[in-house]
Length: 235
Image (cartoon, rainbow, N blue to C red; front, side, top):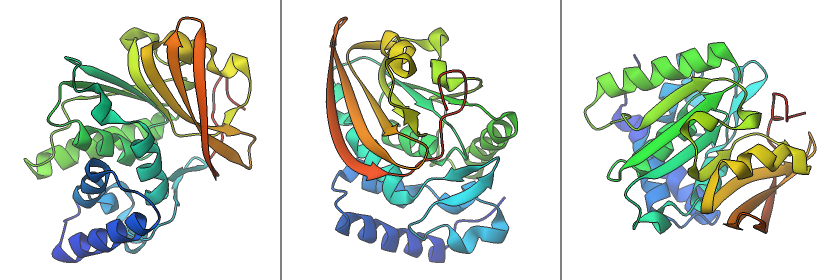
């Protein structure tokens, strides 16, 4: 198990300053980036890259997302909106390294939350599960009891734990009604989906809000580049 040194903590502080300059203002998101050791989610041989604001390969053609991208998507979730709910239910599609999952759990640690994260690749699922378990053992400051990891086809969501208040998609998604059908069905009224929509090379970050069973409001934001969504509804 890697250690979280004062040097790592100082590098995270610099990273937070950098993404603040890029426009991330949500204090909960910034505190989570400052708290969660990103180098724990990367092979120790590449830990020197952990606090650079860039994506990095984790195998299977997948990446640990750029910290700014993680912060940007998380900020769009507006997790502070759900204060009145007894329990907030979140579905993350694309666990990858588990870093984004840990950020969500850190933000929700003082709330009653149920976070389901689904990963297509079994070996990435197993590695993320082990990483999160190791971090929980490493320090009492990290409580990931709210997380449930699943190996499966996230392009169809995860009906077992629906309905969700928030769905976060961490892969490029085709711009087609069929791609979103099951996600919308698994979303509460008032719930939101944050998803990069486009082709394999370029996407626009979108936020969809389910106003009622027939009405979806779409908002569009900045352009990004994600790895493609895998599975039956993916590329």
